[in-house]
Each structure stands twice: as C-alpha cells, then as structure tokens.
Length: 310
Image 1 (cartoon, rainbow, N blue to C red):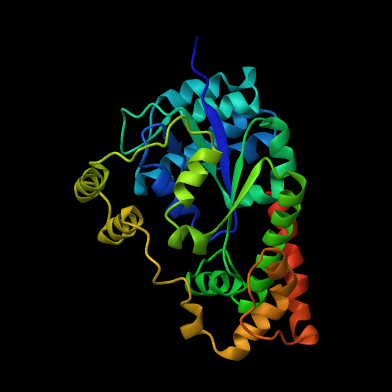
Image 2 (cartoon, rainbow, N blue to C red):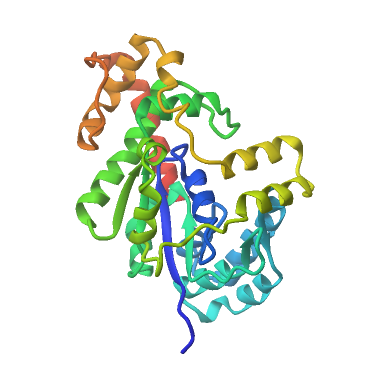
C-alpha cells in the first residue's frame, strides 16, 4: 500500500517562534516543515491551479536560494499536473519537492508554516479536514518589541500601539479557533516553548508522529558544515546557525529593559481582554487611552482586511 503523508500547519502570531519551531522539527527524519509558504492561499484564491502555481513558484525558486531549503525539478511536473488534483493533493505533492539540507529525508509528515493562514483557517480546514494546527502565541509586549526592532519596508506604520492592535487581530482569531476546534488546534506560547523541554514532544505527539522522532545525532555538526560550505553571506550563516542551537531564555522578558512602565501599561491596556482570555498576566494595572489609541485601532482594521484578502 502506498504510504500517505500527513499534512499539518503551523499558524498564529508572526515573530512568535514559528521559524524556531520549524527548525527544531526539521531536525527529525520523518518531518519536513516547509519554508514559509503561500501555495495554499494561491490555490484557494484562484482555481486555475497551474497558472497560479507557475507564477508563485517562479518567485519561490529565487527566494529560497538564501535559505537552507532545496527545491527539486519535480516541482515542474507537479505544477503541470495540478489541475487534475485537489488542493490537499497538490500541497502534499509540492511538499515532497522540498528538502531541508537532507536530500535523503523521506518525510511522513509535511508541515506548512505561515502566520497569515490564521485569517484563512475556515477555508483551509474544508480542504484539509484531517489536518491539525499548532498555533503560536507570544506576550504582546514581546511581540510589539520584536516588530518595532525588525524594520520591514512593507510596514508603513511602526507605532507600538498599532502593533498592539495587530496582536489583538491575530489573538481574536486564535481565541475563536481554540473555542470552535479544540481537537484540531494546539496553542503553544513562545515563552513555554523556550522554558519547557516537553513542548516539542507534545507538538510531535499532537501531529501524530509514529514515534518520538529522535533527533539525528549528527544534525548539529552536519548543519554547521553545510552552512560553512554554503554560498550564504556571513549574516545569513549566523542567522541559521543561531536557529539550529538549543533554545535559550535570554529574550523572553527583554521588553522590560526596552520599554518604560507607561509604554507597557498602554500596550497592555490595548491587549488586556485577549491577554486575560489567553492566560497572560498583566504586569501593570492597565490605563485607559481610548482617544489616543483610536487612530491605531482604525488602522489595525485595515491590516485585518488586507490579511483576509491575501
């Protein structure tokens, strides 16, 4: 009998450890977490799969040159035959065209990672009824700090109050998904992933790994050797080497040093309701800044509208 690969998802907040989790899971032989992908959204948006995938993967082929991923030529055949298959069948076939520094890996579980999928969950679950979703979370102060420190030309607004409302956008969706699909989703807090060694085995079990997916013993050395011999810049080598190392706790509460008390109070005032719903403790008594916050609340609604249209 032909083996049937499982196809699951990592969604949730951006800047919440999704890439870190992907690297940890990619250390296991039977698991392949894909580079951040949009092929599911492309197929959901336009049923002319072949045309959509051809355009999308022309861009992907250029972008993954600066990642640890390899995309083989089989992708051209998969795209050509895509019109004859469902979105799920195409996604599995696409996943099998990738490798993560290990061309001999034959994954039984393919995982598609993209925070943006959070806003398209209802459509995705219809196409992937057997899939499960790990949803990543992070304290709003840490999320805001990460977003303001990592400048992105696509983000025209860099205000911490705007990012606090973006946190609300994602977490409001996450709370709904947790309540509607308790068997389908697993909420994982970045802070817990850093501090609790049992989180990775819990995630593996949730995804239905047939065994407790032991790490390849030589992975750390092999990974470093591959990076050292790659065409990557020193900056990229450092980035990916850091992701391969054991998880540290140094940045969990970095916002306490970067933000003053008033900034933390204002962020937590914006996020307070969802913080309580997700069992995040508010370190300060929230203050009300309704008038000051209103412009950023309105702008954040545009963010949510755009996210749902992508």
